[in-house]
Length: 229
Image (cartoon, rainbow, N blue to C red; front, side, top):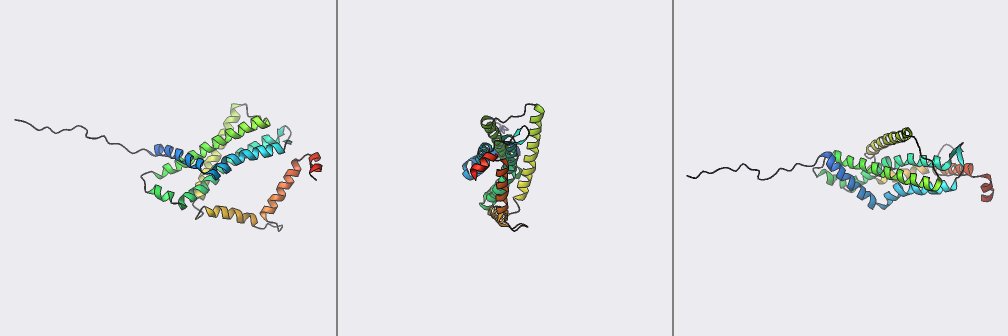
């Protein structure tokens, strides 16, 4: 008499879906690839600050304060502005652009958690800023003999201030991305704001040009001023 025995073995292993952080880290790689393929974003975010540092660092060789050369002062300013460029400006433009071209709608149709999308954006901002800081510090030390901090406490201050700035500007960029209907509005608003008249009757662009000329004259040695005239 034969007996039938039910097989209770595993017919197939159940594969769980990746978690939020796992998908988010993969999104970081995708975001970096997209950023590298976008020539305009890569130029204005990565190369333009370095070029500005080289141009203005070479043009102005005086001291802005006793013992503080202009290159040292300008490098710190470019690092601070890099926080705004890589986080607030980058996200405030890229997220509406992805909403316009249907990327967000396609991602909504996938089982990817929404938090993973923002993890990818935050990872992109962090990687870009770190690379930007390393490149600009290398240029400052190599070409302009900029002195970097020597105390660990100074580096710790620089780190937590940078992280705090990135966090605040990233949150602001994500929040502001919901304001414009399209990403083109940001460019149009920026152009129109420069044509607005100020109290003295000049446009903001004309006023910015006048301020730039005063800054150049202030940091230009007297001998070079005579030659320029």
